[in-house]
Each structure stands twice: as C-alpha cells, then as structure tokens.
Image (cartoon, rainbow, N blue to C red; front, side, top):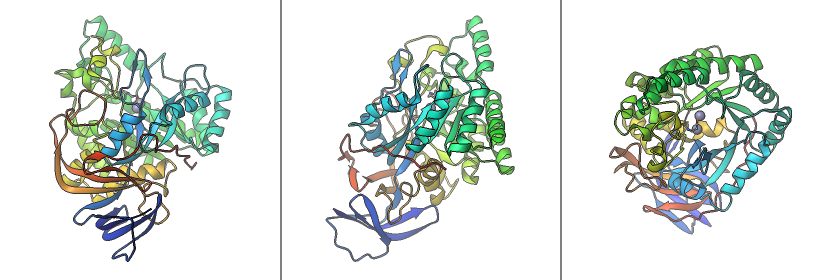
Amino acid sequence: MRILVRNGTVVTPSGTAVADVLIEGERIAEVAPHLQAEADRTFDATGRLVIPGGIDVHTHLDMPYGAFTTSDDFESGTVAAAFGGTTTIVDFAVQDHGASLHHAVETWKAKARGRAAVDYGFHVIITDLTGAGEREMDELVADGVTSFKLFTAYPGRLMVDDAAIFRALLRCASNGGTVMVHAENGGVIEVLQQRALAAGRTEALQHALTRPARAEAEAAHRAIALAELAGAPVYIVHVSAAETVEEIVAARRRALAVHGETCPQYLFLTERSYRDDGVRFVMSPPLRDEPAQERLWSALAAGDLEAVSTDHCPFTLADKHAHSDFTRTPGGAPGIEDRMSLLFDGGVAGRRFSLERFVELTSAGPARLFGLWPRKGALAPGSDADIVVWNAERERTISAKTHHMRVDYNLYEGRVVKGVAELVLSRGRPVVEAGAFVGRAGAGEFLRRAAR
Ligand code: URP
Ligand code: ZN
Ligand code: ZN
C-alpha cells in the first residue's frame, strides 16, 4: 500500500516547509516537494499542517486504584488518543507489592494486546524494590521497557524511601534506563491531611491546600540530588509548580541530566476549580495558580520542560463522588484526547512558542527522551508513518458530549480550542478520517524502546 499526503505544510522541530509525504507500507519513504509518485491513496493536505503523530508518555489505562479502575481501557483510551492526534502512548505498568516487575509488564501487555488501536510502550511503577527487582530492571531495559517511575508520595501505597530511589538511579546509571519521579513530599502531605481531617475539613479544596507547591519542589530537589549522586538522569513527571521549575532550571544550569514534563491541566486550570464540584479535579499534584501556569509556559518555550503528557487517569463522576472525604477520592483526571489541541491552542495560536516547538513538545521530544526516536516523532524516510494532518484554523468546543474518552466529564468542558486532527495515520494505516474512527482495536503494537 502506497499513500501520498500531498502539498501539506510539513512541520518538524528543525523547520517547516510545503512538501509531499510518500508512505510505503508502514514507513515513510520520502518527504519532498512535488513528488512524482503513484499511490493507492492520495490525501490532499493543502492548507493543512502535516506533523508527526503525538506521543503521550504518561497514561494510566485500565489501572486499578483501590476499589476503582480507570475508566478507559486500552481500546477506548487509544481510540480517544487517536481522535486527538496521538499515535503512541507509554502507559504505566504497576508493580503489586511483593510481585515481580516482569509480572507487572506481562499483566499490562495482556491488557493492551488485542485492544490498543495505536502503538504503545510501558514504564514500570516500582512500589517495592528488592535485589531481584534491581536485576529485573536490567532485563526489562534489554527488553525495551526502559523507564521506571518511583513515588515520594502516597505512604503505604506507592511511596518508596530515598534509598530505593537511589538504588533505582544507580541501576539506571549502568543499564541505560531512566528513573521517573513523582515528586511530592508524602510525609508532609500526610501530616497536613490528618490536620485537615481532624478539623472536619473534608472538601475538595483541601486536596490543594494539603499538597503545597513547596512539598513538590522539595521532593524534586531531593530526586535531583539523588540522581546527581548516582550519576544518572532523572525525569520529573507532571510538574505543576513554579518552585519545581526553578529546581529543574537550576539543575540544568549545572549541566545535570534533569528532565521534566508538565500536563495541560497545569497550564489551563487553577485551584479555583476545587471550589465548585471540585472532586472531579482531584489529581496529584493539584492544580495551582496563574503565576505557576505562566512559569510552566515559559519553561516549555525555553526548553527547560521537554514534554507535555496528559497523566490521563480517568474515573467516572460516580467514582469521584464515591467518598465525601478528599483523601479517599481516586486521584487523576482524563485528558488523553485533548492534549494536542490544548497545547496548540495555548502554545502556537496563543503565540507562546513556535509550531516547531509544539512538535518537539508533543512528539519529537518525548520520542527522544524515551527511546523511540527516530522510529517515532520524526517525519523522515524510514520512520513509522505516524502522521497527523492538522487543521490549524479549525475550532472545536471540548465537551464530554462529543469526546471519545470513556468518562462522563471533561476538565475543559465548553472551552473552544483552535487546531483539529483531521486525518491520523498509525504506521501507514488511517485510524481517524473525516471525524470517524477507521482503525482497528488490536492493530497497535508493543514498542521496544531503546536504552539511552
Ligand atoms: O492523581 C494522579 N496524578 N493520579 C495518577 C497517578 C500519578 O500520580 O501519576
Ligand atoms: Zn504521579
Ligand atoms: Zn500519572
């Protein structure tokens, strides 16, 4: 099968030019102006942008959370991702206490197999790092599962101590893996939560008040120090606070391999959301204020934050409302479908950064950081034909009534955004065309990612 995407404005991090893209089978064969090529199908992209498929490196599909499970599985979640122009996800396989890391990966592979509509990889959430677990980390890196998330928060459930983080970092210093850290000081948060509950304060706003920005920055600072001591890189997930950005900037000035992502919710929403029907916004870290948003935007523009992912972790409103106490509300929110539009709207249409930077943040950057580049994240001969034809002028209104995520609310309900994925190809196969899903559940493949 040969597909020609003709006359689009092709955007890569290094530049933008009108060109044709020829696809042969699953790969890009050629990118050049005025290609004289026969094709089985031709798409006219005149007046449209042609960008590499989005890569969302932070999702939680079909993930148990106490008595709850995230409401998108690998089918509904990846179909929704595709509608938004995302053609690769890296999801988190969670280690059960006492179980092996391999078991986590096999469990998550079984969830994805036969369901995922776009390609996927896995990170592993380490909850309990034994000596055997350290050896497993080496094996997993060799098998293409090259990143590991550890938590400094959620005592008794996910939190590990500094020694475990340090051991994971040392292991990755030698095996080429990457440690990702959920940076919030779990001890501080627990004390603040207990004080709030003792004072009879159970409402959603307390979620933000008991998770202060400095508690995030402290944990990020510590993770960075541990990474420096271990001689390993570190990736700080879902950065929400200006104080955390400053820790990352200071480390990068010292030429440390410190990387960070943020998520659309921290760029577009504030803690005011907790005041009415706030439980739907319960996620960790919590939403912050406008100055924090502006600091995140400037760090994205300057290259100090290198990726925008979603932390897609959807629970239905019934699940969000199942408990009246904010400490028992399942944490997380949906977003996999709207990442590209939101970032395009706020970043490019909002004149905060260039088209090229948009592509870097949503696709090329995550691909490089997580061992997928140049197979993913590049519009170049030999790369997978994960391609989005993007209408930069078209507007749409975000709404739970029209989204494809399997969840009954949208964080951005009613927001009008500029930028729509009109055609989405995954390894050369159309998956979204003219507003309809035309792909196949199960067509997505497991991605073996490269070590550093
Ligand atoms: O509240 C959140 N973010 N839930 C998802 C798990 C995590 O910490 O990333
Ligand atoms: Zn986290
Ligand atoms: Zn997460």
